[in-house]
Length: 79
Image 1 (cartoon, rainbow, N blue to C red):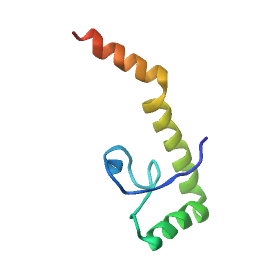
Image 2 (image 1 turned 135 degrees about the horizontal axis):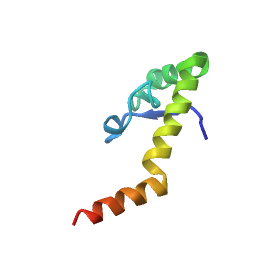
Image 3 (image 1 turned 90 degrees about the vertical axis):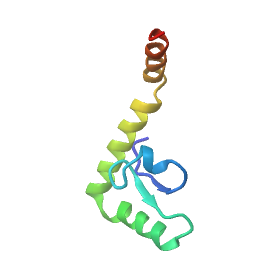
Image 4 (image 1 turned 90 degrees about the horizontal axis):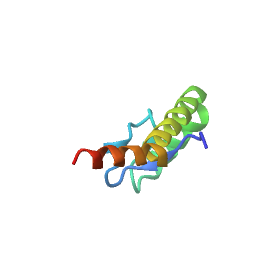
């Protein structure tokens, strides 16, 4: 939807996303960290636009069924 996203840092999140590049990563169970993340999104228009574009591009590339189907076909064809 090309909207900036805030997510908490749980599991493998840092392996897939870069903070303030693809989305905002907040500390879990830390209200101040979450508030600061929302403030960055709300009050920094340039950052919000960058997060929206980069997040959309990441999702479109990594989760698009056409891209993933082609990756699977390429993997199967290796054998």
